[in-house]
Image 1 (cartoon, rainbow, N blue to C red):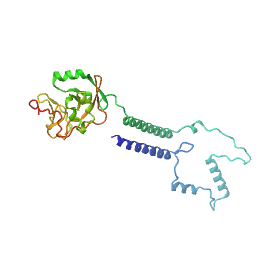
Image 2 (cartoon, rainbow, N blue to C red):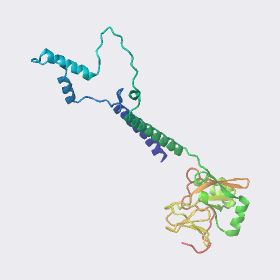
Image 3 (cartoon, one colour):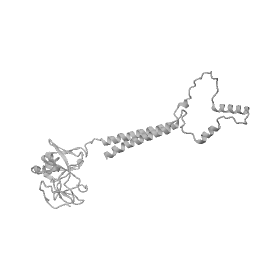
Image 4 (cartoon, one colour):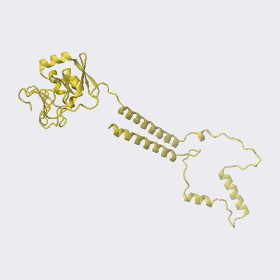
Length: 283
């Protein structure tokens, strides 16, 4: 998603710049505020027909009247060449922006503001910082002693909704076996503290995997995948064990790091704790 936006944003800016430039070229106006353009062939022909060439059979009087008519139509009074030109200030209406110019400029400015706002929002989205919810570092909201007491009294995982994670006990005596599994490399420090963080999503097709109290396993109701107490695969179509999040213990405070992608679960056949089903299955 981020890569696609990095490609799309420059394209949008380039198209907007081309549109603004093309609009400005089309809207070039003369001093009177009228949009200028090229003359048509008909207009050129009409101008050529009125160049003031004398008609062969026209009288001198007729030609003089025609000259006077053209002089009056042009609105330019002839003055002797020795007479100095007098500066006449332009009328207020002549130097104001026409309605067409106003709307053209307003459209271009609105387009520029819109594209700029979109670009800023897109960049902010790409480099957004997590506010502490899923996708960042999350406080589990329970101390390690209280967590241990919860496990002992309920015999079920402690669920952290904001992290979409089950916190489960991991036997410290089995940590040496876990260290031999490459996929456990990042989560071994948490195991040494006696805790693992299991992502709630089934690695088969993504269903949320509930806890089965009777078997003391995680059992997916969608297609029957089963996982041990620490997330190692026990049955069904799942291609591996449950994925993990890195769990940190600082003093008695427990943190779950859900930034980035989850740590890939252990491969099929991994059995570091040797836990079998402790009762009837739920699925």
